[in-house]
Length: 96
Image (cartoon, rainbow, N blue to C red; front, top):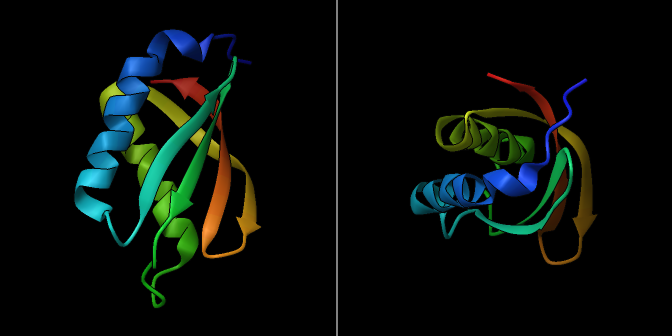
């Protein structure tokens, strides 16, 4: 079990999300909503590519976070909201 306070990685996490948005917005846009001890909650909006799996967009953020924060996450929960909004909880998997 990883015991890390993710708040200290906030700047790196935000950089990872900015990198994600740079290449995927407006088709998909991520916004950091909350940082917990070992989780982050991200809001995804956009039109998304219908032939791609929507989960692919969420998984892509994991790679940008690895590159910028040197942290590996896994998807813990996905909440579907109206108007193509998804609230995704990522859990820290382990430090690379």
